[in-house]
Image (tube, rainbow, N blue to C red):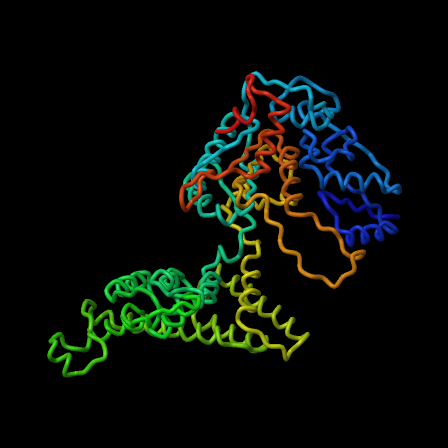
Length: 532
């Protein structure tokens, strides 16, 4: 008696997994499922041919050939027409259905297929901003749901860098009730004010300490709760900064270090104390206790000329602000100078989070505090290997940057029927009626190839990993294979900083070029008819 094991959705399968499953085959019955877009053999198609399979299906082609080369596998094929959903071909379908049908039947590229009018099934959107891109997506989805029997759960939106679009999705989709939504694969730090505060604290040594740099802390609830500040008291901090004429730097020494670090061996003048946090806030404090009269001021020989403008009732708030900013400065100096063992770092970081933040009455942040403590446990496991090794803060910071950017957080409305937003990865695809690809501009798609570290591993034992470009090409092909009713491709065509025009991803342009070679709409090229 053998137990059946069914393996779905493996576009690629690491050699180690393959070996593991092969060994299981002695005691289990293995069933591999492969989404083959064509019933005609295409394992010898090469990139450069005028077809989607040749240009975007390299990973699928490798997997197909691998299965065909395994003589012990018994192959069974099941193909359905994308229009009739039967093994027989039917009448002409939508543009998307005919593209899928051409993949299935291996239609010759030379015969251009003409469509008399543009339909809903394939859309390309250009937008001048990310927010406008999301608004255009919402409009297109509302149109599809009104015209066809499409539910929110029938819609999948995939984005290369989902954290860049999160605030606009939340703003645009959150302002309407027709399409509830769920956002997956968000970095943990994007959904936690506690982690945001910790990371901002870690980055203080890289900041100029301008007003906005420190006001960031006073927008974070775990930080305010630790200080015992209300939101109204937090707003007073900006008033203090304006009244004290704070510009940048904690004190004169801090300014001089910053200038020396950024001057690149050029001769520079020594900074003044005026406009620093310490100088400005101390002047405000003196304004509460020193008389206005200039003659009295000279007689009392105060170091700074006092500033008026705050009430005695605000003195406690001012004192707390001065103390916490000094504590942050001292913490920054400590971190930058520290070279400790991992166990010492763990102890210090545990104290740091408790010193500056409180999360006890914030349920969402309690789980994030546990996440942070789990990272400290991982550091402890690393310390066991070499307990005497010491590390500077830059190494610790890199560790937490990677940890905080892990994707796993989600934002979801309490509704089973939701539009799902997720990261654009090969594993994210499943059969739905509508798939939208958002943010396919030249800056983020395809993803950059990460640098390869040096490895002390013999070449025979190394396994070739699919490149990000291969995976992103496969993602485009998967979009056409998994979407049943419509595909929407969208990108931002203007730079957010200078407003200059920027292009879509070269993969999008390559896709449109292939469509132009094989199809026409109303006698014109699809690249002209489909862009909006």
